Amino acid sequence: MAGIADVARAAGVSKSTASRALTGAGYVSPSTRTRVQDAAAALGYVATTSAVSLVTGRTQTVGVVMPSLDRWFFAQVLEGIQDALLDRRYDLALYGAPPESGARREMFGHFLARKRFDGLIAVGIEPNAHELERLVAFGKPVVSVGGYDIGTNAVSIDDEAAGRIATDHLLELGHRSIVFLGGDPDGRHTSFGDGRRHDGYRAAMRRAGLEASARHVHSEVTMPGGYGAAVELLSDRRTRPSAIVGVCDEVAIGAIIAARRLGIRVPERVSVVGIDDHAHADMFSLTTLQQRPRQQGRAAVQLLMWQLDDPDAPTHRIYEASPLVMRNSTAAIDAEASAIIGVTSHGG
Image 1 (cartoon, helix red, strand yellow):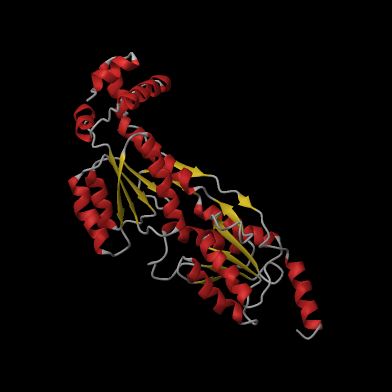
Image 2 (cartoon, one colour):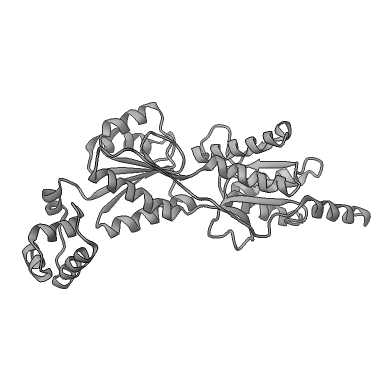
């Protein structure tokens, strides 16, 4: 069975260089790392976790905690994290931690205390005071993804700006009756980032002198949640808005499906804009603000590795760009007004 000395000999480097190349502990040039990895692969050499730990003092495992595993954003972030960790030959320990759940209490009360991973990536987690204490006591690098500022390295889009830009887009098209759709009062289905998007919506409405007419229609932050809330919202012609800002694309797509079921044309009768650029956004021709959650996951791993290599480095917050992606779910209010007048004049 091949050992590290065999790999070093085949790659033409010292054992310490071969070890650094295979464990990620310390700098090795990309060309040398590739040569060592190729030699290890040819010899069938795999560094065991225990062997790596002896050299580096690390577990070669990163913990990832997120409130949900079935939403598109979280799944995409997780894929990015996994890709980046695999590149570095790190293992991943995944914890689903919905708010107020036993799993979450166990995660913050027990798993962190055992310190069986080198660092933690918290995705969409809004910790309470006790959980913040546990994160501090953890004493290892923590990176947050997706909004909430816990005083650590972080990666996100500017959610408030996203909500504002989405609303400004509709205002520029002439809309004044604009509803913000998604999220709920008790926060059980709402992330911190979702709340910041609503803040951006309110700021845009206030700046346009429309704060009094701002409306927040609550729903679960899912496609079925957006659909159900939009059916109720759009069914009454007297209170039907001319435009909807979905807290995320899943909610916005739910609203488009609801409008179609009710025979309401999008965008002629109601405009809909989302935030995320979900994999299904193009299928529904949804105008949206793009975020790249997979890229955010990879960036989070990079920040974590920097902190592992230099524990005294200052913290950074990376704001990923979120450009507006124009499709066909939004239109000028004049086009809608003409459509409505046309329908009315024909008795419809």
